Image (cartoon, rainbow, N blue to C red; front, side, top):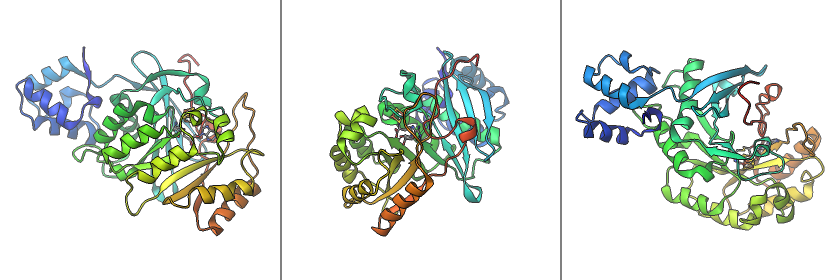
Length: 346
Ligand code: SAH
Ligand code: SF4
């Protein structure tokens, strides 16, 4: 079977080449073609000897997945639909932030097992994990498509479809491949993993000390409501998650982000804000408020701007950093919680 070249770390590729009788440094040249020049045709890789090109063509593939749809939002963000070789689909969003900054929102799974009641991805259930190559390919293909030079710093957030910590090994491989200096060179400090709070996996990720940023989808300050919104809370409750976060290695200049989905009439009151301040008082935290984005069939409502602003003001007054997430791509269903698997014929 041919191996997806985007799944391989520089080191693994080097070892494979060595085992096949080629020099290890060729791996760096291949990485350079792939990730710096965005060339994925082995025949075009001019500085490689012919036998190596033949070996690569026989044993590796670069075309495992492809972009099959692209939708442009009026706010500049672009949603990409990818298809895997086994004809499953997953989505990624290219976000244009202020001051010419770019963020890519990546998927880590097709579907999701966690089953949060407000999330569209959860509706289709869980299909399968994406492998490292399928995760990396999102960055490669979007950077190439958008004509973003390799040396332009971009941010990665694992906030698309899926629960990244439920697919930890592949996500960690992808982080390593994306951060390789001879390749895309996206510093781990620019990569943020967002999780619904699988406590033992937060511990495992922390132990790897990768330098990645952590975001916790908290959404509620009491266990009853959180369990209603996020069934995972029955296994790892709020305190269990907070305890793990307190142990997590973070860069001294950074903070753990707590995402708080604001839902009309459910968790948008100032009493919840007060509890949130108390809950996070020992953590180097910042809060990111997200407006609930409605989708067909959802029982929840988007909160009013006034309520969200008041919530934020309250946190700020108590000294808790807080931002409100700009909702991007609403017109193309690319906003938070709006990504899902699609029928390829749609
Ligand atoms: N599974 C991970 C990462 C993907 S979800 C996690 O849950 O953290 C990325 C973010 O989108 C999460 O904070 C999630 O709670 C939020 N989200 C899900 N559904 C949403 C919706 N309908 N409106 C707004 N945000 C939503
Ligand atoms: Fe999965 Fe995150 Fe959606 Fe929950 S919010 S179902 S964890 S993708």
